[in-house]
Length: 558
Image 1 (cartoon, rainbow, N blue to C red):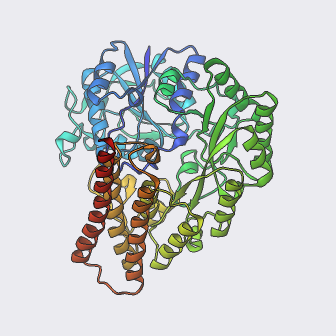
Image 2: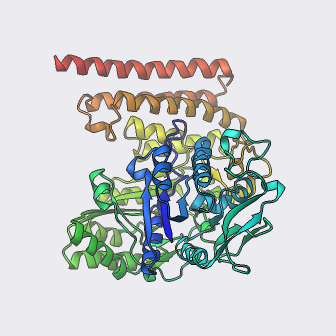
Image 3: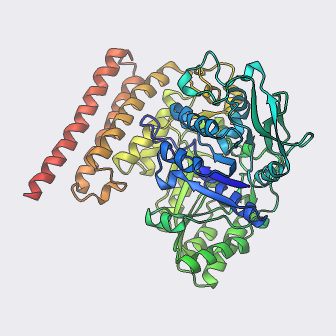
């Protein structure tokens, strides 16, 4: 049997390009782990990373169709907002070319949207819910031992819904209510897999999360050379889950809530790093864990043990990770820095204590400041997770956030500042926030809208302020890549000196504060005319600075 694991193309969406919460870093090694588990169990599998290879949808289709023996296609499916349907169009084309192909989806998005997907898209045969490795193994074995029969698809699950845009889900080659498809033998029910039985009913039995992560084989890294060529860091997954219960996060619900943070042993993590360093001369690693440390004393001791192993073996490496602010503790950080710690992503989320309480972070703005100071004392300038606007934001909470950003000095460049000043909480299905808001908020009228709630901030003034700031920041972000020639590190672009970057940054910060001050003093009426005039004034100012910078650059080249 031929099996393909597909990382589908990640289609550009200019309106959502800065929002990465839809593709959690903690999922980046799922495909590699699945491949290793299948190969360890003597199954032949191909990993097709269309995203890494820069394949278009057409190129991806051509490659998959060329595999005449393909029976199982497992797709790591990422939510792409308005362009999500393009991926399902692609899958429909693949199913049309090979009706017997079993299409399985896995990842965060299909885990929480599996009922809608299996209802609206009969071309999808199954969805892996939660951790994918051993569910996929059982699925492959089930198909090997199964047979092919005609199965009924109920009227409610017709191949193309009458009220849907025909372009969003092309019909299969064999329209109607009866198709030839791969099904499991009667009575087979794979834990962790959602699928339709012969009568079209969706069947699902949960699978407990993997308790001992050391038992997993190291993930397949067939594209390590290409990743290095593209400057992509080598990811290590040292743990899964989180001991926190943040309202905006769907990490623990993904794992079924039965097991929160689970960590690999320090020895097991070090062994993988050592082998990668020795075999490929890799020196730069980043942990894909949502929470590197783990809980309390055990988490600190485990991190220290890993640092000890790196130091004792003389590994000259650099690494980074993501963590909560309450886990930043001096003794452990000192040892980790000696071992090569160079990058830390801190989940601050807010500088307003009331917002932090609503987020259920169980941290305070003062703890946020303390963690930043400690890391800076050891030469690390962290990057941050920060939510300026949330469903229950107020003008006061926005002010508190802004003062926090100024005090901590983390608005360091125009690009960073634009992100920080407009970032809005995203409410996806599976998060605690979704459950509390789903009855009263807006969902769009398409197949994927139940996955995300589109909300207005309850406080009308805060909502109006968020609208104007978000539009300004997004337009500035759209301007910057064009002007900076899509340079990833703007400071490294030699056409601009630091004073100009500071002018751009200061202009954005000043504009935010001026507008906020007017809202605080009720000196404006936030209507369409005000939005339009203010937006144009600020964008024109930024454009003038950028044009001036280009002119200076051209003069220097003469």
